[in-house]
Length: 92
Image (tube, helix red, strand yellow):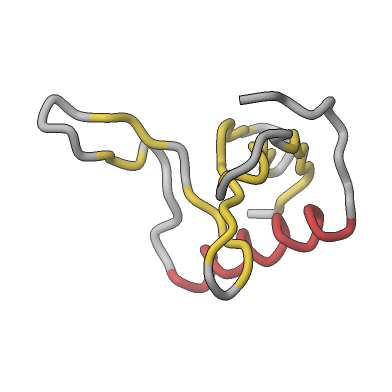
């Protein structure tokens, strides 16, 4: 499975959340609302999630293998650091 498009919407407010990302795979499957978070050692991605009745967050979609997660994170972070913003920044 190849990543065929990455769209980044930077967040203009202060805080750890830096951007929302839409990722397209093989020009036929898309995942919205992947988040770029600023951590202590740099940025990382957080997969889209929803809050359960118990108050915990569960991923809606996520990579199964560590290898693919690394490939996905590397591609998203590279696009973010390169400045490949295709959408307007959003305020939170």
